[in-house]
Image 1 (cartoon, helix red, strand yellow):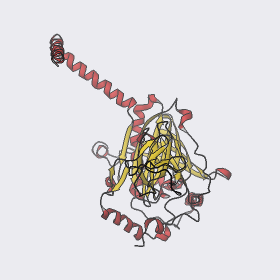
Image 2 (spheres, one colour; image 1 turned 180 degrees about the vertical axis):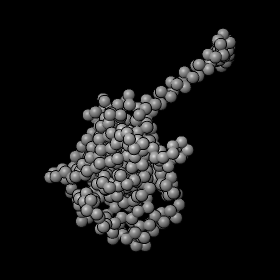
Image 3 (cartoon, rainbow, N blue to C red; image 1 turned 60 degrees about the vertical axis):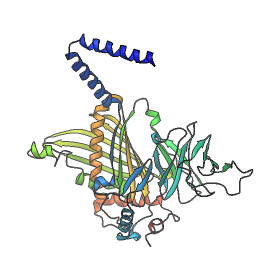
Image 4 (cartoon, rainbow, N blue to C red; image 1 turned 180 degrees about the horizontal axis):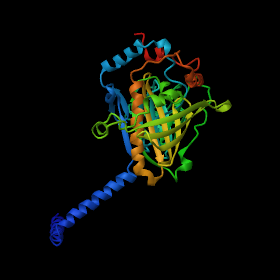
Length: 433
């Protein structure tokens, strides 16, 4: 102990002598250099995260406990169910279409960890083994109902119940061991879910028909990993039916209706510095479904330009998007300004009228400063849609203009994700109480 104190005192004296031997300005320059280094490091190597919850949009339904989404007040839940009742539930399609769903970001589940998640009307436990294999099971132990995702331990390829230490194999949900018993009772099995990890997400296959074979989850980012890096993501919670969100891509007229004003219009800068409109965004769009065996795919093409002061057209972007089922979209953007970018969009239905939407952004490393600007701009544009979705109702048979033909085409395409066994809103939301 005495030697340790002496060493510390010695280094403190040496440090004081070091500072005395240098000009005081040296400390200022050193601090500026460190700050510049940290700023450049943040600019190029720290992903940008943009998060907005319902309370940012005058909603206050959620609070967070780890990776579990909980309700802040029973009153809020009741009010949301009343909102469902106020809408004509006969107008609404089933709340959970069939398809692949991203239920968790890969970074939120480390090796040897298990977590609980409620989505799609299901209670699930997701766990990752030490060999980096991910499994998804129903959350509750068939023994006495303990939640395997809260306190459960991962051993080999099994999840161990925190209550009586029954072990369940991830590949099939079968109970493999009861430490205080020499046998395993018949029926000691938990439903397991087909899952796949891709593009920074853990996906599960959700389908009302148990025998339906999953389609392939295509467009992996692994093939371009050397040229593209992850630059950040945004995350939103939205109060609407899931179908409303992908339908935006087929709603050609809405682009120039709510996305035409520039991002600084109506801002403090525009009001105080600029006397008129700074600029307008112009959009050209098309949407069409894929035929045949790839009928679960659809394509949206966008062309964007920004008109400044009514004279100059700049920031042209050509966007090609692949809609894969009801909840997964891959966008590729080609721009002279930003180069080639990729965006992954996923939608997860947390509740019948509560959707979690995430966009992940990928591009070259050298583009990092512009990517941060791009993420902010895309997030602000998306919030314009959210401000509509949060307060609208779903119309099963809307009155459409002849120019809205792509919306009718989209709804016909999207109907394939509902089947005869898909649960209705009344069944899922229990709005008959």
